[in-house]
Length: 288
Image (cartoon, rainbow, N blue to C red; front, side, top):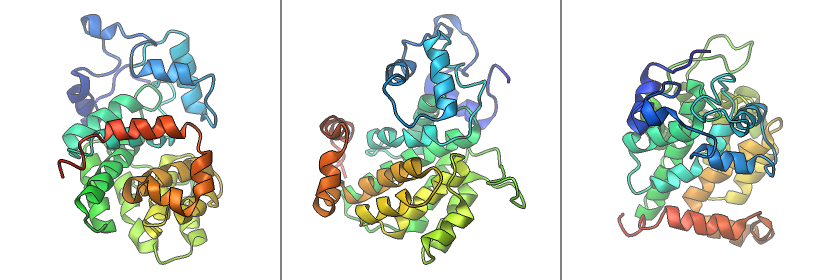
């Protein structure tokens, strides 16, 4: 694998921290596993559950002393681990959900574990959708699936540069934006049919469109969104996590507490997660 990324994704990385991961420039190149964003991943590894292969390999490399800007290069994973943890970036950016703000942050916080352009684009897509939905809710506007997906497509345009086949037997490679654009055509179909089409494996070109389907099928009903995703088969926990991020940003945590109080009460780290989300979105509803 090359020591540095090039192309539009690399330019977004440069905007994020003024250099391309894998290149050394004075003290900037002297990164270490205790420096953000690697430090939190190292702390999480011993206690995390549901860890994917690529994330485990990359964070193990971080733990063993590899710099965070190189730890994900060997795997170059296009899995869904980066997208799954991207929602807080969307909360942080909800006051200003612009590509210039969201894309570099998404790349920066994906890079220690996932460096494939599809994975980087997926993290930006999830973060951008969360930011868009939080702001939409703050403004009191109605959700239009086509506008949401157009916003996401524009946001990831400079990152979504490497098409791939969603499955080995797919007729031709597709980009993530193109796959997401198919979702509205499936909203009137049964979930099984949609999941047979999009697939629900750990490859993010499968699981992220499936998560958007689960959310957009019933965007005001968190319980239904999560149940649909949890019953999709294959990588159900990640699909449900991403779909839950989307519906939570749109409908709000109080709707889940009302409709499924036992679920809300049993959430791990509920208090800490809730207070962190409030801090990240501080001021959003005052400035909309």
